Image (cartoon, rainbow, N blue to C red; front, side, top):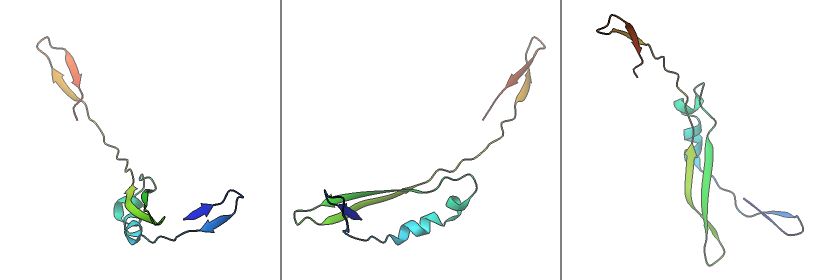
Length: 87
């Protein structure tokens, strides 16, 4: 994590290592075709001593699944064919 001074100078404040994120990013769902890249969200807290603390780390990814829906043909009382879609 970097801090930026008003003059534009960047200074390294801290370096975080979250091993759990690497495990999630390399699991079966994350590496499937049709999955999005993992999105990491970090929440911080600044205490009275002006030290940053990670309060929450969250990883989200979406998996897209295609499902075929087959129409069922029902015959009505009037001898008309009726197509009904069911999940």
